[in-house]
Amino acid sequence: MSLSVTSKPGTEPDPSFRHELYPYRDDAQFLTGTLNFVREALEAGEAVIVAVPSEKASALRDELAGEPAVTFVETSAAGANPGRHIAAWTAWMSEHGEGGRPVRGIGETAWRQARNAAHLSELRYNEWLLNRAFAHSPAWSMLCPYDTADDDQDALRSVSRCHPWIRQGGQAVRNHDYLGSDGYAFDALPEPCDPFQELAYTRGDLSAVRSTVAQCASQAGVPEAQLPKLALACTEIATNSIRHGGGSGTLRTWAKDATFLCEFRDDGYISDQLAGRTRPTADQTGGRGLWLAHQLCDLVEIRSTRDRGTTVRLHMDIPLPR
Image 1: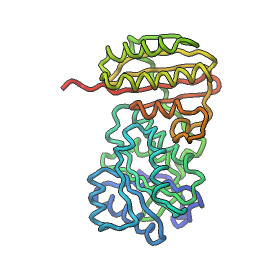
Image 2 (image 1 turned 135 degrees about the vertical axis):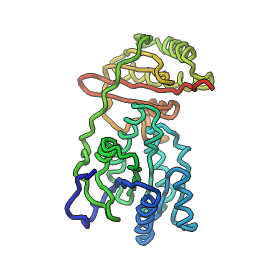
Image 3 (image 1 turned 90 degrees about the horizontal axis):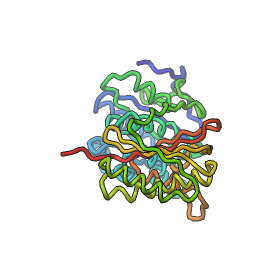
């Protein structure tokens, strides 16, 4: 597929976060593009953070022969929930960019391992949100390798729209398909599956929320060890509804495709698109509910508009029978 890029491949990037998509077709192309990116960084005296699948990391380690400026990080620590990834990159950048040293990151998202359509949608949204999260970080740039071997042109274009730059011929070039800082359009949330349970809640009903969630989750097959995590996350979201969403809300629970879902609807509005995705500071008052939900659940979906209010869906995986 031909992506729309600038006609001046030598154009210098703006002095801000540079977020590049690198489409590749095989292991050889992966190594060529990523090594070129690393060598540019080393020549400029920059640190490099690599967060890629283990087999790709092994190949890069062999080529770089223990280069001290390159750090390989364990991506499993951030988990599969895309809502945790911005905080992970923030921590890695802070750790390895001591003294304001410029940092480059190589992060390959596990697109092929997306569990379902909701997970895939959140992976794309996270890629777009990276541009907002690091918009004012002039010492930070990221290369996102993307395997195009399956020739899925629609998927490639969807991912491309989340990246302001594309790496072609060893250079970063402008991507005219990029949605821009305000252009992201959410996928519509599908309706709950029948049968689903529904509970209206207000002040004093948090125990009823926890009881309903625990009973429905247990019946759906959520492991007992996960129930306290889910109860805490649901308590935080319901509390947000009561405090900031007009004093009340509606809970719905159901199961679908080996996933248990808790949906909270209220009349509030969340203006901060990064809410819950950045670690709260020690002296911060409030703002911890969505952060905790992202840490405790396998996926969190948020839809919020001034005219329709807020919907938050918490996902918890249900193990398949052996």
